[in-house]
Image 1 (cartoon, one colour):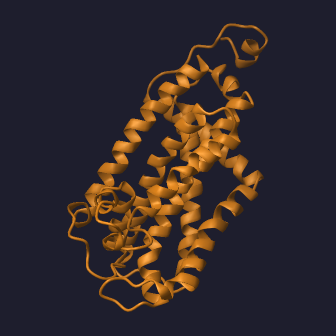
Image 2 (cartoon, rainbow, N blue to C red):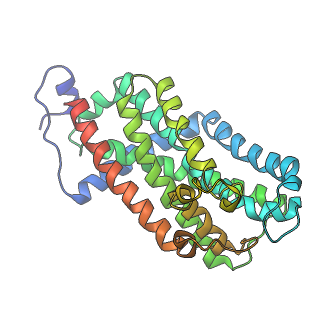
Image 3 (cartoon, helix red, strand yellow):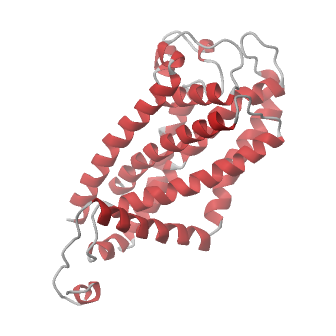
Length: 285
């Protein structure tokens, strides 16, 4: 059998393995490689934690007392209950920047060309990368939840529903990581990938119910915010955590937030995973 080493010095290209089992195995091998890299460069994890923790502290203690939720009095404690679902969702979606930069770096350093020389599924490179990002996102959520408890956030609907809420967050984060994969494959440098991975996220997260009630927005902007997939996940998490502060919006997506959140995440994942794998195949030939 021709080995990857033989190919590197001019041998024949090894035949790729096919089948779901082979793809899963190859994806897990790539995921372990990325997770091992994260442990060797702990700055990646540390700096990834700093931003959401700063958001929690700044919004809770600096602006929380000035923001009033309809039907309640303005207070930091009330706003913290309202805020945390939005911060959790923002954290999982902002992981897009890391995914896009990581894939762009692998492309520019030629690592993807090395993977291409191996008898592995083409999609495994992207699936492995997104799975590694999912593990890192789960760890970040765990630490962030502990910080949130420290500033007064509480779960009121029981542990099983809380787990379901975190599951929705991870599903959204995994779906968005495929957007990051497509961005990383489409730009020429990790720096450009980081910028491209973040610039569109700010309007997505702020034109939503994450930080202020949608009813406080201009009338023409409210339908956009209601049908924002980010808003659906935030509202679903508030419902499952028992953190609903004030009346629930009467808009249909907010009244059916859990199924809407799942459907949005699955659509995003299906579309962008297909686009990413297609882009990867064309990029590596």
